[in-house]
Length: 282
Image (cartoon, rainbow, N blue to C red; front, side, top):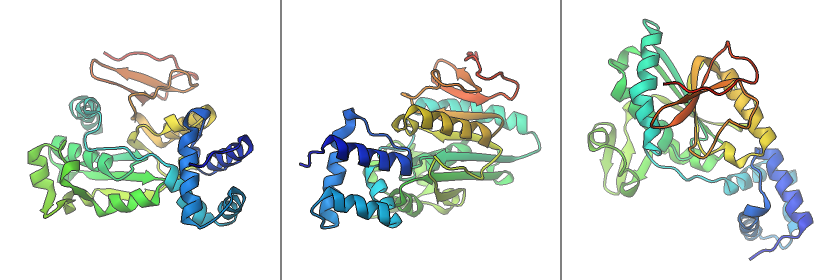
């Protein structure tokens, strides 16, 4: 197993942070050592100096390496309480507020292999009274090209669809010999694309953003930058879903707290001061 010197740890950590926003600390140093060891073997290089030169001189290689250090743990209906709140409270409120303007846009930021945006699509088709009468847009993005290809293909082994209710699985998925493929009714709702959350997005007036278990890997300054970008991207009364271990309490943000007995999320209130005091909704 590769053992990094302090100078080597610092320069590769800084390179990754600059390229992706992902921040390695001394606590997850072993993960970086493991990824660097794999890169040395993959590119048949015998020193970290040669690897560093290759990464800093070849953008495609750097992108591929960043892909290797990302974490892609996900599943359908992950954190079920959040999807219960989405279906029972958030979507009904948006439907009432939209009235005759039947347009709904959701961003799955850090979508990994696609389970999250496909789950969002299932919730929309389940809750909207007449989905075909709505202009629905689900934007799904990730920094990993490898996982985006899996997401676009939309094929999952049987063991990975066990959390999908049987009626939804039968209706919206195609049963193949060795697994299930997402059907066309779901696929047409989602646009997958590469995006680095450190950079600006042209998305605007989004109704909901899911960014779960992503910003936890960023250092504090990058977290605040990304959260501010989410605020700017959301329309009035837009909602932000974060991971269960992520919070905005230590940040200067205009997001307001939405909390009930199931979960916690955040929403945009244009009239709030900066920084906004966190308040609970009944």
